[in-house]
Image (cartoon, rainbow, N blue to C red; front, side):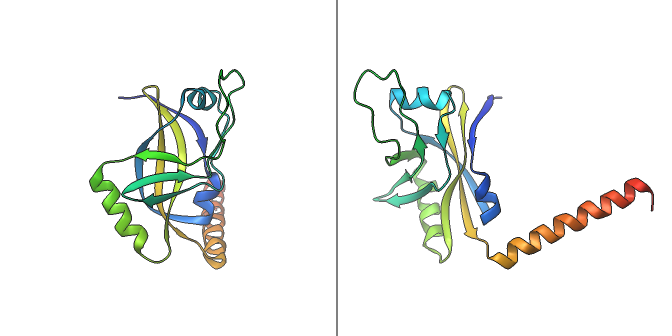
Amino acid sequence: MAERVVIAQNRRARHDFEILESYEAGIVLTGPEIKSIRERKVNLQGAYARIRDGEVWLEEMHIAPYPSAGYTPQDPKRSRKLLLHKKEISRLAGLVAQKGLTLIPLSLYLKDGKAKVELGVARGLRKYDKREKIREREQAREIARQLRRGV
């Protein structure tokens, strides 16, 4: 089985969104970008994916410029093409067309030396949904605490 080394995670995504499905996608990068990724100089906060002309593009993901790049460094927040099968892209397009659904990167990792993005189909949570989730978590914690005490 392929080893998966997580480089960056979008922790806010699981807090602000309900993840309905997730997909693994390759990402088209330049040489200096993959070197920066291996040095873990990546930020997924605020990043999202968009479908344009039958292709999936990752927007607003920040990859720090590699300091030893021999040529002019590229824009750290440029759009990067994601590699998915045509069937997956058409399924994603159908899901995103529904009101309230969006594509967000959940994590960036290396698999067999290649950069991959875990892409999630997500629905935004409202404030009361977040509060309810926190309340449920606290109740489960309290029950576990009582069971440990033997009450």
